[in-house]
Length: 291
Image 1 (spheres, rainbow, N blue to C red):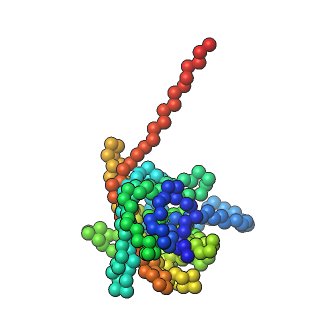
Image 2: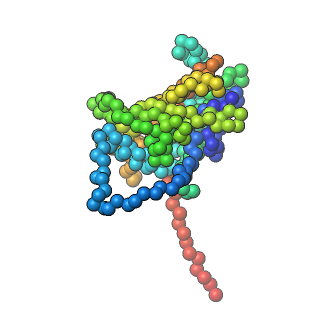
Image 3: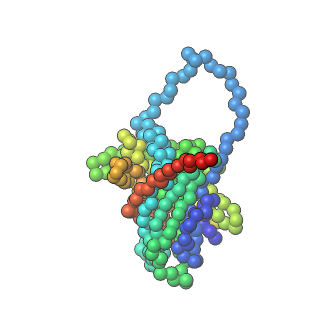
């Protein structure tokens, strides 16, 4: 069984283990709404005034705009990714773990009109591999922000929750639930078929900037008939500062993913650090024509 395999294969991703389940949140699939709407056009002076958003939903609107910018900026940076793969016992503690280090980059492309994401990993430090162990491969979870990307706007319902203060900063909390039958950024692949996983959870948003600082998502219903009992992910984001020129990017710093099947419980921790920005400059020279 391969769990949640992306529909976009990473360009230079290295497998972490040989015996593994594969769990991915990079299952972004283009979808289209086709139909014909027929209605009489109301006079301009009869148009209803725009709805006034609550502070929480206004923060969600700001977050949507920032998420689009995030995927543009993500292609401009590389970082170091430390991955810990663990098998968790009944006591909730790791019985076995492996650690790896990668050079990491996420590339986003919207040339065809739909957003396509590819993760690139080059191994810097390979983990010791125990061939008798089955570990979980997780990727794409830094892209769980797709939940509030305009592409998935119709896939979830959003409701404001209570505000929460952390270190003197007040964050807006937005709860989300999946729309039955809608697209999901996470899917399980079994016997060559993709099974979307319904996700529900909470997003923490800084209301002035719209920056998401934490996103928690879990499986909304059990897929025990496919062998998957539970899934939970928690991703944290922070501002990364660059110099010459002065710029600030909003990037993931950690992701913890727990997956349970009928026989196994895995927990993977991804830590992202050492962000470096790069820019490509193209110089075009015109050759002189000679007789």
